[in-house]
Figure 1 (tube, helix red, strand yellow):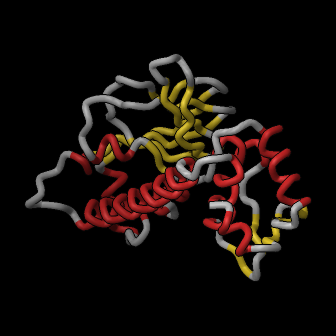
Figure 2 (cartoon, one colour):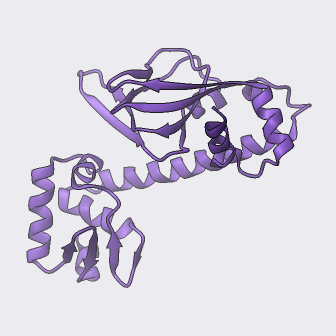
Length: 227
């Protein structure tokens, strides 16, 4: 467990805490290391939020079931040290509005803390710093969600691809592809064959050039015109 506590200390959640503040946080919290099997739920819609989750290893799918019975993907948590479930605790929601499912065998630190119930007049410095880190996490997730909404609202598949490419960080017209083709298709709300076909067409039209895990923008003006 000590190794995982060291990982927690080095996570963004605990950024800026000194040794004394970190020890105070873990002393005031109930922290468990739990392993989840593939396709096992971490939490489900309508359950009461009581814990904060930090991924040690594995992959967690956060999604919502629609009224029509379809699955609406929201995010995949797969970076070691990422936290999830925090918004529902911070906002003191009565129940989860999404599901969290292990896509493969996963290890998670499950944290039950008083940080979300303390009196505003007497906030320990450790809790203040963690709350500040959580706000930064909220802002980052809100930005990513806004970007995704912009992409999905762009219209045709080509427009969505163009928006996605232009939003990606690039240097000298070269974009590093951080998503697999399958995950990119999921992000763009299309199928993998449709995505591959449209990327191939854009390559033939000399808009882009794909080489392994990088993509080069050959005609940025024409790509802008797609929008």
